[in-house]
Length: 338
Image: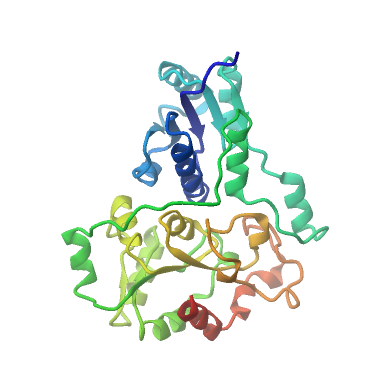
């Protein structure tokens, strides 16, 4: 008789969007199997993502120092053995996690099938169909050891009470609050900033707009953008991740690129509109529990090779600014409708 599963380890080190996509799946798991304790092995920065999940704790991996390299992973494996888990679910499946798999071979170790073959076929133009979502791929890993997770009836946390600090940043604005996260890892996934400025200008007639981003250059550009309008506030560089989550939980909607902020808003139960450049929702990376109508897409009649890659890092030279073909009014009207 197999040993009952009481404590599991779930691994995903990066990226922000991929870790954020774990949250609704782990939440559904803990609700449907409330006797199972879950430990998340990830980077310390992502710890706040899991703050509202019962029976879930985070084991922070220090991949730049203590747990760096083969010796660091061996040290990490010794630490993991001390927490005594019954099964390990690897939702990353990269070199680091495969090293851990070899070291921790005595513990049942299941890994994600990333669907690389069908994703290659999608970007090579061999077939243009909706692939399995990343959320479902995560759920499939748990099912391999009998933890079948149903994602069809999700629940979400209630909006958080805003701290005095956040209320001061909002500065008494009374309009409905929406968020806009205009940046992405690659320019090919972004809507041009000059056009986004016009989107913001039009939407600020209806809403108070909160701009989200990170990194010194994004902070600089968002601050400059916000200064041009009365009802636009940049919070980039002004909040902890916990505070940003509190604020996002109070938004009416998030407008984002194919990037992490959309996935964060989605696991908090917010409506998310996603602007897609050279990537495409068929690859399975749409934010959780969103209508396909919430995707704003480049016209493939004009750019037939989309998706040119899964992550937006590869594209023909003439495709880098493909998203600029989406009109400003198309985005504004979609936000007003949703």
